[in-house]
Length: 197
Image (cartoon, rainbow, N blue to C red; front, top):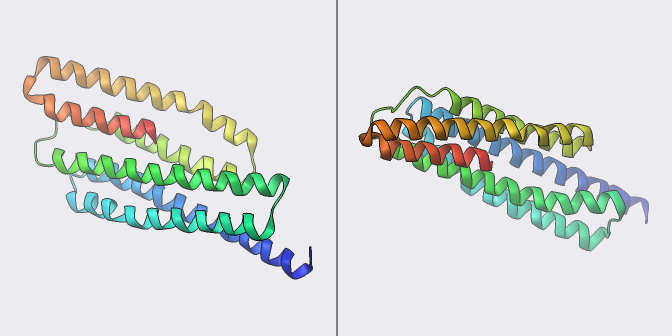
């Protein structure tokens, strides 16, 4: 492969990495803001997160286009091919996480119209852990750090346990207070979105 082609290929791989990190950073922010909008009862912030989904969708298209360009023009092999293939998958996963953050904000807009059901303790912790997993997974990908990736996979159990606790606590409240059912179901849905992230 001629030298100038090598430089273009290296630049394209660098651009792909940077685009994935930019998209990941935006999604991390959306996760954080979705829960902040719940805790602070900030409907404007929730709407801003919903609006950010357009940017996430555009980044997914940009990343997919760049991956296809790299595959077509450079025909990468081995490690580089796996990097590009996984990059396409990651952009799809990040786009889905953006959608899940939007789903949380849609619940927030409804919840903010009623009184708070209970203090939010476990949901912010769950969001923090989910956001940390997204950040760590992206860093593991970029740094090609398999050990870190395995550690993040194991931390999924903590998020699952928090979702179980939240659901159990809310079901108990709903059993005792039928007027809390609507809010309880919405909060269970928020926890479910975080677990899916």
